[in-house]
Image (cartoon, rainbow, N blue to C red; front, side, top):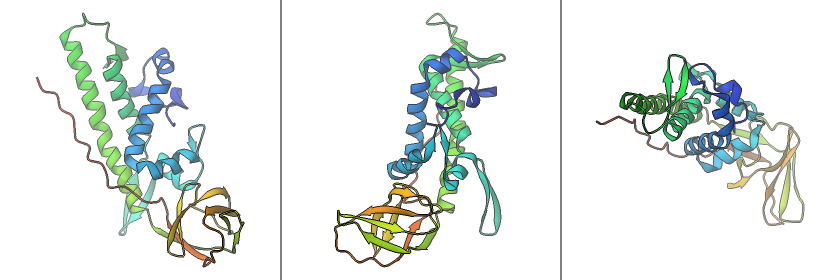
Length: 238
């Protein structure tokens, strides 16, 4: 998704581990970052977000801000949102640590040698799992708060809406900012999914032929947010 497409760039410094392990686990890393991002966004928004990625990088500005972070104003107060990269790094590393017995040392992330490893090293491994997972939680919440705080209603006016006589309509407009494929828009009080978006030109919706649409429509900047899932901190019990 993001980390798995640029694995050498995103797993360095405190997140560094061997190139061999990185290359062996690209599929797992991709799976796990999709898992936590779907939990955060819900499937409806994840489908929109994932479709916006090209080679692991978002194209639309709202999703660029979501990934990379941005300063924004909330109730007159400047807020700093740091993006989702570090959250994904901590989460996927906690999964890798648990699955492959990786742990942090003074010279980077190492792999335990097997069943005969010292108990202290196993404890270190457990601590790494817990620490990495717990470090991702405030970043997860920060990402959700950013979406919630910036999910304003957007109002637009189409220049025309054409009945294609095949149960689809083409909505023509000159400004498609914040509109993506799979975005939900509201026309005539009904929700429709955007398809075949052409930037600053048009998009399609599905509806039975013969409907007359008002040219004014609206949508939420990001879309229908889910209630934030409850993620609890992990602890070690011995």
